[in-house]
Image (tube, helix red, strand yellow):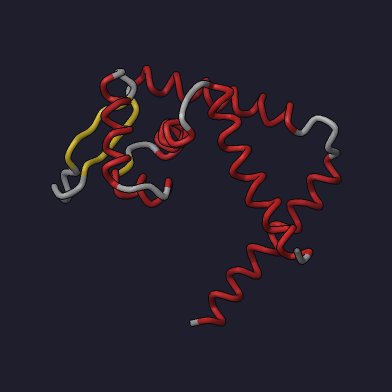
Length: 143
């Protein structure tokens, strides 16, 4: 295995593991957590935008939002500007649940970074910014 292979395997594994670990911590699926927090941060959002953001199919988004709606956490309506689209938004109860999830996530992140210095965090951030910039440069070059 090359150093590049090892780097990207660890990076990808860490991202996937972190997302799943928090979801297990709060007893929800990772996609459910993502939908709740995204709607809380972004406000009313189309199912299509949720599908793209989560990288899942439209039927899965519809099921997730319908489940949230059934629990009184979200509501849906037809987009008044284009009736081909459905919009989802949190109810006041859903907003409270999502806000608590966000607070819980913050505390969880702080525990995960225990023993990692601010300087070490900054080094990792600089590396990630450089890799993302390289992705953009490569995509621009490939066009």
